Image 1 (cartoon, rainbow, N blue to C red):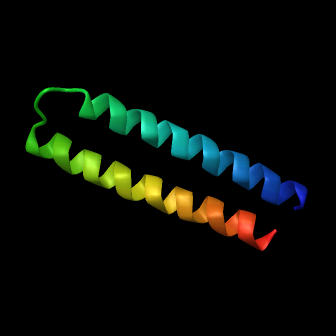
Image 2 (cartoon, rainbow, N blue to C red; image 1 turned 120 degrees about the horizontal axis):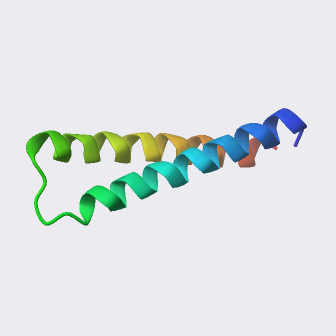
Length: 61
């Protein structure tokens, strides 16, 4: 894996962890408003995209 790939992998891993934390923070609340529910859904989608990109980078290296 070249240096650029390693850097991109680290960035994606950090992004994934940040998104994971945001989802957990929102899901700890007893009740979410509809906009908050939508935000959780969007965060989960972004987290999944990041996870897929991480897997692709690891697979291709």
